[in-house]
Amino acid sequence: MKVNPSSKLTLYILVAMVLGIGIGYLVHLNSSPETIKTFSTNIKLLTTIFLRLVQMVIAPLVFTTLVVGIAKLGDLKTVGRVGGKALLWFVSASLISLLIGMLLVNFFKPGNAINLASADLDSAKDLIGKTQEFSIQKFIEHVFPKSVIESMATNEILQIVIFSIFFGVATAAMGEKGKIIVKALDAVAHIILKMVGYVMNFAPLGVFGAIAAVIATKGLEVFSFYGQYLLSFLAGIASLWVVLFSVGYLILGKRLLRLFKLISQPLLIAFSTTSSEAVFPKLTSELEKFGCKDKIVSFILPLGYSFNLDGSMMYMTFASLAIAQAYGIDLDLGTQLTMLLVLMLTSKGIAGVPRASLVVVTATCAMFNIPAEGIALIIPIDHFCDMFRTATNVVGNALATSAVSKWENELGPEVIEAA
Image (tube, rainbow, N blue to C red; front, side, top):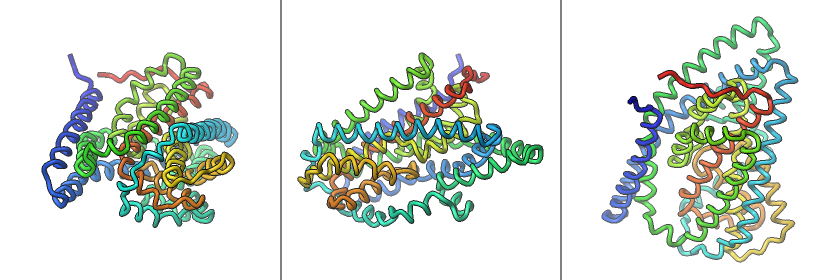
């Protein structure tokens, strides 16, 4: 019997996670602080290599697939209709995620359990330095590109999406002349997806490096300080997954289970590397395999990576209010709801990379007179929280793309690959 290469890779990733935990913990127990720091820095190079290889293909993949998708959608009316349905999902999911975070942090009050002596002040200073980015002017500059070349060089997905939408609509309006460009970009997109298959072979190394580095530095003891915080957060993630599963089942029916089986490998990679970007190309191909038409996937998924980060949204209200609790700051319901709306706006377009949401939390704390240094309280456990929120982001975007495909009657049967 022939083994499915996809299942083989998933097994390798799981083995890499276990090895990473084991070796990281051995280094943590038997090494000096200097050796641990050197080990963590060097072993993380494996993760850096993997993530950079993935980032290498993201910009061209988003551009080519989105332009082709919009051109295939046809006229502006269709683009507007599909985009409207997607935004309806994104806004609804974001509000529900933020509300779940707000309700559960008020119920469990995890901030009361945070040990003030275990704060990571050095990492907090780095994050506080980035909070100036969140003025209205900077927000607008972040959304609209002044140079698409610069946007691609820095992997600013939202800016690439804006340019691609204009380019795709203009290409569709060109009629026959535009079809030449569409055909060429379609071929390029397929070549890049082929490259993705090669890049994914490096995933186990990236996973091993990420897990080994964080366990070597923090050790397993970090859970003893932050058990209540992490468990409260996981209750929030579980609640969000129940909501997503329920809505997904209402729309997709029994095919929902098949969707989760197909995206299990991207989920595992996202979980272990804490990077949504790392699985964008693979998620694209799995959703097309599920039956979503390429024109829908290439339009909705890049938008989702900017506007539909459900796990991160839930964490933002959760973390911001937990920090307030740790400092004994009592925020009334009106202030909390205002914070929720502020997060709704400032979080749009954050990159799907590790710790991006912490920058937003830091900015939000400063805005509501919560000590910004409080971010140091949650940094020691953040990597583990990030694993779950990143996986949730992937689930949310897979469901959003599948749901819009179903609403547009563009969800076909599953594509069975030839052996």
